[in-house]
Length: 170
Image (tube, rainbow, N blue to C red; front, side):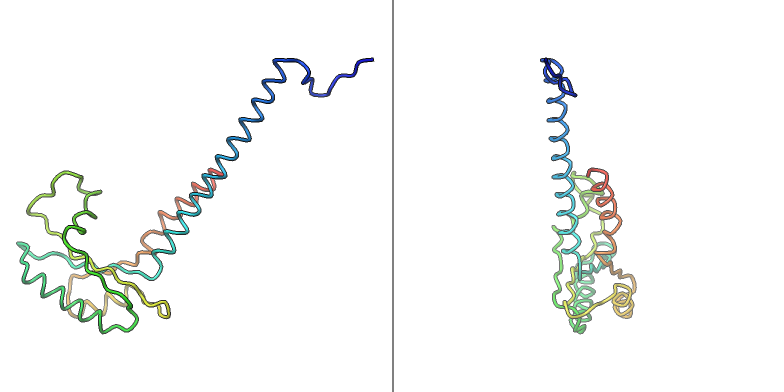
C-alpha cells in the first residue's frame, strides 16, 4: 500500500513551487532583519555622536565686514572659554560653513552677496551638562543676535523617523 504525504510534495511542479516560495520568504526575512540592524546601528551611532554637543551660530555682518566679524567671533570665544563645562571649542572655517549650506542652496555657486554665519561647534565635558538656552542667555549679554542649538534635540525628529522605519522594516 502506498502512503501519500500530507503536503503532496512528491509531485514535481508543486514541490518546486513550495520550496522556491519558502526560500524566497527566508531570504526576504533575512534581508529585513539585516536592514533593521543596520538602521539601528546607524541611529545609535548618530545619537551617541551628538550627545554633549552644541552649535553656536553667529550671523554674518552687513557687507561681510571681516573686521567686525572677527571681533564678534573673538568676543564669543572668550565668553565660551570662561565656561568650565565646555571641553572643546571649534570654529568652522568659511569653506566648511559654505559646505553646510549646499543642501539648502544647491551645489551650484553660492551668491557672492550671501552672508555666511560663523558656526562654532562646542563639546560639553562628560562630567557636566549645559543647556542650549542657558548658554544662549549667557552669550546674548555680549552678542545680541546669537543662537545656540542643541544638536541632540535638533536631530531627535529624524532619529524617531529612522526608528519608525526600522520597525516597519523588521
